[in-house]
Length: 120
Image 1 (cartoon, rainbow, N blue to C red):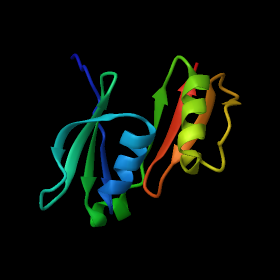
Image 2: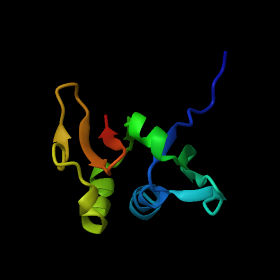
Image 3: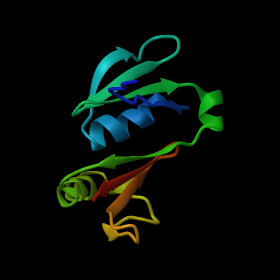
């Protein structure tokens, strides 16, 4: 068996919130756009990563995912996010921190999703 990509689905009550985090803050690009459709949806992409974003209030209430983005330069990512979008820094991990498992991490969050930014 061979897999080439993992593409998570993330559900939001208001997809505009997702776009603020992924496009404005994390600098993903919209690769597929159905934002003006009856059930707004888009695919955001960056560096070979893809995430499906959906506007669906019922599913957003059921799912509160957390995932990790791994980087080779956590200082650059932290500096960019803390300067441009400090409101997304997670209050429990708002600074780059060396974790007991050896990774350096900080986290961002919005009302729906938690993302840990990590460098090993």
